Amino acid sequence: MKKLIFAGSLLSPLLLSFCTANEAPPFTPGLDGGQRQIKPALDSFTSGALLEHIRVLASDEFEGRAPGSKGEELTVNYLTDQFRKIGLKPGNPDGTYVQKVPLVGFTGQPSARFIVAGKGLELKFPDDYVASSPRFVPEVSVKNSDVVFVGYGVVAPEYDWDDYKGVDVKGKTIVMLVNDPPVADPQDPSRLDEKMFRGKAMTYYGRWTYKYEIASKKGAAAAVIIHETVPAGYPYEVVKSSWSGENFDIQKADKNMGLVAVQSWINLDTAKKLFGTSGLDFDELKKTAIRKDFKPVPLRAKASFRIKNTLREVDSRNVLGKLDGSDPKLKDEFVIYTAHWDHLGKDEKLQGDQVFNGAIDNASGVASLLEIAKAYTQLKTPPKRSILFLSVTAEEKGLLGAKYYAENPLYPLVKMWRRSIWIR
Image (cartoon, helix red, strand yellow):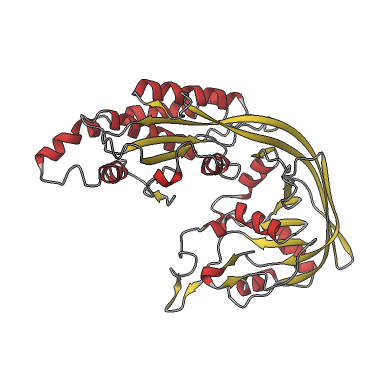
């Protein structure tokens, strides 16, 4: 489903979905009848209600809303109660407001070492690097694997882009840059080329989840992403906090044995030290990586990792409510609003405040979801199509709740309109 991202006023996405659900705009400025039709819905929006939802969801009591925690229980109960009070029907055909999302939590104890030009480069966890294994096994190890720089680690046929150029990285440790390749516009080098990776917008190729996925397909032993604050959009402290604790993945029969054994990040200073000791200029290599003719560059280095895993099964939940459409022929089609309810939880190793409250990310999105749902219930005549309000889990852990719903939809995906809106 294509996602339309909005910021600012809630009015625009609300009207967009009215159009989608009804096939024609419910009002046009200047048409008093149309304005009267949706005035109760628009009047239902209040800043006080939005702020109250945010205050509750981002409170210390909710402990940062991590999956598999007390915060999840409180959040799921809160959303279920709100959907019920609003007047939405259970979104799951089984009569409940939840979809179970079976996850495995894994907490790794990693060690890592590079041998560069014959000299040992010890890495301090989690200040220099973080690493975990998505495989559901007690321990994984990678010993003396060759290290290869693969630019942005992207294979994108639609852009005629291949950072691997047929180089076999099976069994090797690959190192790659964060985000999409920032290709300059040939007509104006001060701007990014909109025809390449959508310019300033991030494509899926820029997400860390993709980079580990392509590493798995290529058979790499370990995949290391170089963190940089500006292209990543967040400081290394976020990576450090997220990846030094418990991580999650969807339960799978193969125990994730097909995934790359080691998923790692290193900070920029560590990367420059690694490249420099190999006799390479990091900044110059980074420039070459934004060209189509870039080819993988071997480093004079060997990498070793060892990760001991503590595992636990977690039954997390997506929360969903439904507003039935008014047209007998179209009510089996759906427009989806979605916002993830989870955040980063709490870190008991911190002194003082231990809770990552997540007011903006994403209590504000969930508050918007609830207020839009309430607005729909104020319409005299519901939209022709049904509306599904879906709040998903484990976005911070790799879009897992959304991925699980896409792979296990409660309603046929062919019945889902492509103008669903992602509140973020």
